[in-house]
Image 1 (cartoon, rainbow over the protein chains, first blue to last red):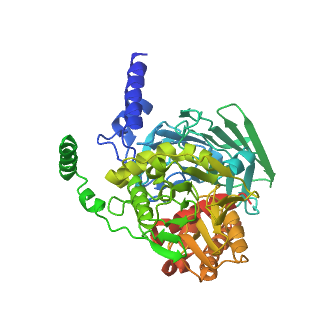
Image 2 (cartoon, rainbow over the protein chains, first blue to last red):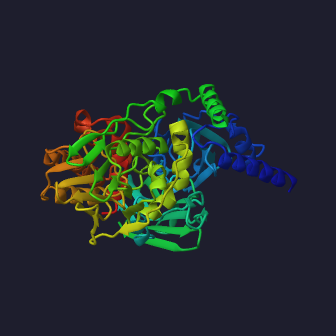
Image 3 (tube, rainbow over the protein chains, first blue to last red):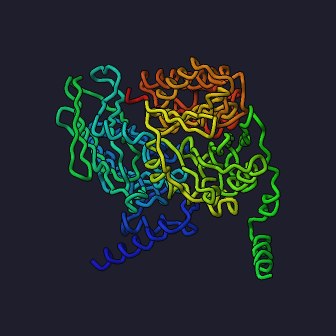
Length: 265
Length: 313
């Protein structure tokens, strides 16, 4: 309890620093040691785990509100040994803990990508948590700024009109062959940091909380998301259908609105 | 005397501040060119806003009637707004009665406050106010840093009078009528143009980029549609948002149409093949590189913006 309070205080201090500081500048003190303590208290993380994981992110992002980030595993998922979770941490974002992908051994290989907001020059980290509890990290430095505080949406009316609309995009799959699929949901993903001058307050956060992707009732990926995910959240992944069936995607947002779509294979 | 010391104090503090370019900025050579009778503009440089160029990167303009003057885009900083106002006073004693903002971007609106003393009517698209509200905090924080001293005095001034899509507004400057037209989402979701009926001069705002890489902050589909519409208009001269005023305006619209179409078709093909944003920005539109200024800074961002729009087609 005591340590939770301390963590909360540290986190609050960090957040107030971030919100009053100049956003384009990277904080002088690296936040990672604090973040590690908050999210992986007392645990050992193997760094530069390049034999297990590859993280890809642009060195310099074209649009800080839409930064493509992908993670691949180099070791196949098996029932005995598999990556259970991949935690994504963006050190210098207002909410650094950005996503947690809960992964099934059924996935075969891990090959997932999404689009993030990046608010300042930062390390982006992927930490694989194996089924035995061990932790392995890879990271990339990304130069981008303003992705969180930048105004949402280029066409507010069009975005609102299609809120909750979903797509599952994939090639025609062959049973037994890996296939790439994309789940995308139209959502403004308001992060609570976008200021509205008329009401003189920040637009209420309204974001996608989690996305669950199942194949014939086996959960493939469940991702806990937050305000670091871009507008219109997109999850791309590879899986191997072993029998014919249905790919199902369910989305829940922070106002408990849910959206679903499925596709027969 | 007191004022003198105050000036001295201000100047010396500026000299010793890191913003050492300010002294040269106040003596900046700011000239306007006459496009046709009683229409003048200052052409912006093809750079990003910085302390040296005082944000004067877009075209700003004015038209003089028999009663008063209309300003069409006010400049990229308070300082540019002041310089434009000074340039107007050298041409006419008539008051500025309208300040028209083609859209919200800083290079077109940040000079607004320099005209406050003239008590003009500020005019913009019906969605300009919402766009300004959403971007104000972000623009203020970012551009205060980029522009340094030139930013001081900049205010966000909302339109007093707005123009709606399909309801053009005609204003009389005294024996000189100008028509303001509002558009659906294209360069942004709140673009307007100004047309001088007597000289057939069209101010496109950023609905037309000449020489400088177009920036998509609205809808690529919408912008292609509107670019085609302009080609059928009866116009003598076009003053684009960026690049020189020209009588050969059709070529400029064709160039922009080609650029936007290359992006759209390239991105569509990659989406249809289940490709990614990274793949699209690596290959789409490379052949356009030699055609546009600041391509490296804006092109791949345009591809990204188009991708996230076109994947919902």
